[in-house]
Amino acid sequence: MNEGAVRVVAKDVDGINSTDVVGAWAFARELTFDGVNLTDNEGATQGPITGESILAVGEHLNLSATIHHSASGVPYDGGVRLRWFGSVGPVRWDGGSSVIVQNGVLDTGIPAPVNGGRLMLARIEVWDPQDTVILHQIDLDPMDVDKSRPYLVAKSNDDAWSRYHLDEVVVGINIEEDTAWNGPLNVTCQVTSTERTWPEVSKTVVPSGSFEGLTLFTAQFNFSNVGDPADLDPQASLACWASGRDDAGRPLEGATDLTASDPWFVATLTEVGPDLEVGKVTLTGSVDSEGANVLVAAPVIARTEAIDRPFVVEITLETEDGETIVVRREVNGLGADESELIRGNFNVPKGAWTLHVQVDTLGAISELDEEDNTWTYDAETSGSGASAWIAGTGGLAVLAVAVVLLRRRTPSAEAMEAVLPQQTPTSPKPKPKGPPGADRRVAGGPKVPPRTPAKTVVDLASAEAALASLTPAQPATESAADVPEVGAVAKDHTELPGGGDYDYTAEATVYHGEGLGRWQLRDDGSFERIA
Picture 1: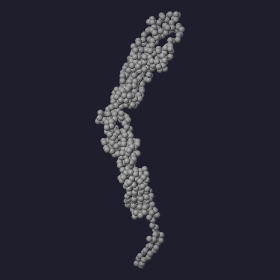
Picture 2: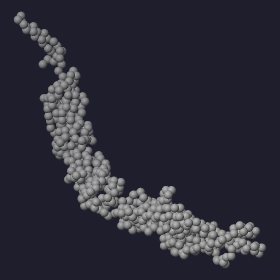
Picture 3: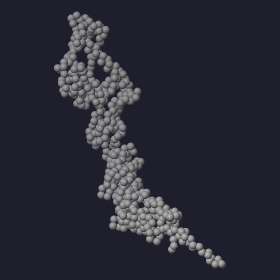
Picture 4: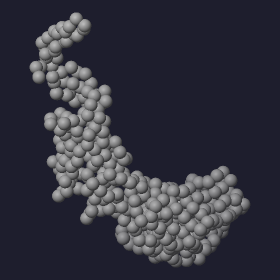
């Protein structure tokens, strides 16, 4: 064949005429491949094929390209031959097919290997229709082939949780995966009982590790705000199931359908749990006297089991004007059958009032019995008690003035006797009074008989005139030598040095005075000098 030669022959009745043309054509076998793409277009995981790809057995690789004649640029129409080969472990991956290209478009599928493992030394080749010339070839990077679907390992239904400890439910998930799972897993759990069902709670988690062919996940749930454990029926359970796909796009499967109606596992919810309660509350002071300062002591007890999370205890005073907080304290857990004493003090208001003690105010602890978390005390002050208290206090003050006057008496002050009331001989210097209501036992403290202050009618104008005529004298004080050192203990308030005052706080009751030091009330009713 003479490349480029063309002979044109014309034949009619008169004869034959021919013409030869040189260079009229050229023969070219080369084809140009543009836009070659090898992709995974099947399953949940799709995209270009790279060394990071994971193929799934049963899927196809899609090969697409545009083919033109290299010399003329005209789109190719005709057939091509495909060949592929490689190896997955000891098993060969090879095959071939014939494909028709129309208007220059090549679009065909290549089956993935039928064995799972690592695909190595893989290549795809495009030949001419006669299998004589390779037109194009693609070398594949090593990649994984996934043969099996991921399997959710069954969990024992013998597991049990307390329905009162659902604030921190940790669910461990193990999945058998022969290739890789790096994506998320959706885990859903739901609390159900005979008559009541809580809403579903879902978590999306990523793998926490792998061990002996298992991919490990951990999901943590908090059902404390989903429902009230006390409302559940005796027969209650926690059901969980999961869904997701491995890196090859294969869906998770298990021994069940992994749905709410056919869950992965079901755990029994027991009725064993904690129980907080308010113990015997004591009020120390004149609760029926307006203005009197009252010390309240409320023990909080943890029954049946320890409380390992903090909770809040509040003591509030409710009056016609509203509610005020006497003390608010956070307790950082309690041991089983242990108690914590919450102290506070308040001034008795006028009129009707109610004292409330509330344990676990914020509802942080789910308990067996919530009804024993409160204590209430109702009272009403008419005002007469307060007047009597004020009058009594005033009488003591006047009496004290009278005693001072007598102690300061001089021979020229005999006229004082005419204006002062007749009194019995003064007694030795009295010990300080205890805190308000010291006649009541405080946390085991000693009991002191009530003392009725003497009431004396005094002509204050005459007393002041007599006092002004006297020479001022230094008041008698407790000698520093008579005050015990720091660390000393007075068995009750009667042994405290005189002349001091009491301070009441939520933390402690303290007795103090100039030169007397600071004495703190202890649980047994004694006082210890702390400064």
